[in-house]
Amino acid sequence: MHDFKFKNGELYCEDVKVRDVAEKVGTPFYLYSHNTLRDHFTKIQKAFAPVEPLICFAMKSNDNLA
Image (cartoon, rainbow, N blue to C red; front, side):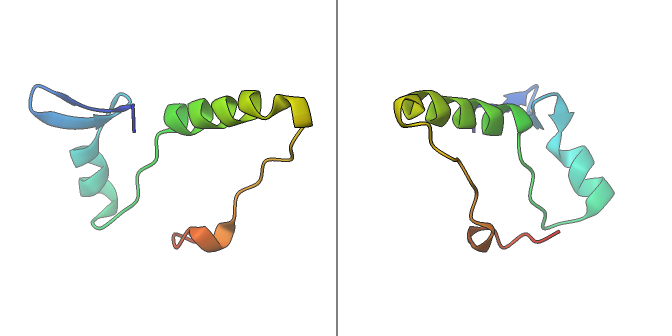
């Protein structure tokens, strides 16, 4: 989770305060970093490029169906 960082004692996801999200949507909640997901996808894609994989996500592994 490279894009979750503390700034001045506040936790941020990219440039968004996690506290602001919690106040808006309530808790508990899931918060994903688009940058981190994209970065990890790119690394997997490059690592397996020689075999030209079809990279998919198993929805059953995600209990957040929203």
